[in-house]
Amino acid sequence: MKNLLTCLLAALGLTTACGQKNYEDVDTEGFAALIAQPEVVVLDVRTSEEYLEGHLAEALLIDVKGEDFLDKARKALPKDKTIAIYCRSGRRSAHAAEMLAAEGFKVVNLKGGILAWQAEQRPVVQE
Image (tube, rainbow, N blue to C red):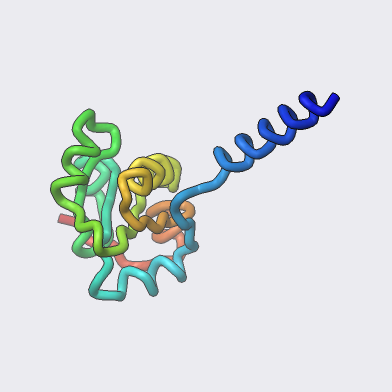
């Protein structure tokens, strides 16, 4: 019985540890305040086609779907700055945030992505 209880507690601990995020999610208001800071790097992880349709000013583009995403990110992103990350709806950027945080980056993800940003009529750049 004691062994069973120990196993159950260990399993619970592993489940809890695995469920913890190693990055932060913020709403559009928090994201806007964050990217206004000069020491923050804005990262768009959508495709180049999506990026051209409209993106946040001065956003760096690294497509999370690319096989070389982590290699490009390691080369382009500074570890001493916060990475403010977004995608279309927040799903891909959450995945990218997990990967980057595991590499030692401090990452903040935009909940709802650029769709939430645009729904609040916040500015985007088209090139």
